[in-house]
Amino acid sequence: MADAAVIGTNAYQDITAADAYMVNSVRGAAKWAALSDDEKNAALITSTRIFDKQWWQGTKTQEAPTQLLDFPRTGMIDRHGNPIDDSTVPDDINYGSIEFAYDLSQDPSLEESGGQGSNVKKVEAGSAKVTFFKATGGVNGVGSQRFSPDVQEYISQYLDGAANVGTGAAYGTGGSGSFDGDENYPLNMGY
Image: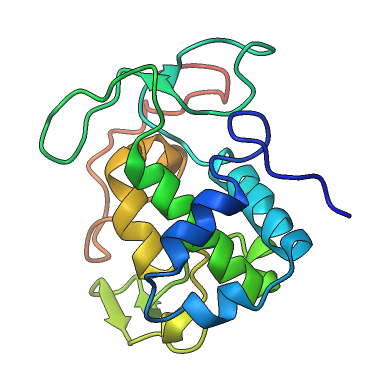
């Protein structure tokens, strides 16, 4: 038997809360109800583990070992600019974790999916062209995304943009640069 999901210790929600939420789901009520308690626990715990790998706004309210999970957090605001109580887990995170647990129970490969998919078909440097296409497959026919649109709508407001740190970007149309040649910096030097 799998370890039971314990709120605040290894999962944001337990089976009782997930069952109460999923009973009203058009897409998943019957499939969720058909799962064993072990399958539900595993999905809820895995959902939380993956959530805790995301870059969230703010900081944990308490440091480990007192607070094992990433929520509750201080310094968070919702999509309307309202501060989030730093002693509770936002409902959107709870609901998103249940939705993602359901998605994992239906497609365990999401646990191994690292990306959010891409709809870029072609990129060119000369004349700076980018061609997009509508991605197919994946969760609910939406590319190779880890998080379904349902999950993304719940959690996106709390994600921090820092997850994009270190990504590259290129601009221009193939012309020469405006550097004068003195910009040769060793890797350990700043600008």
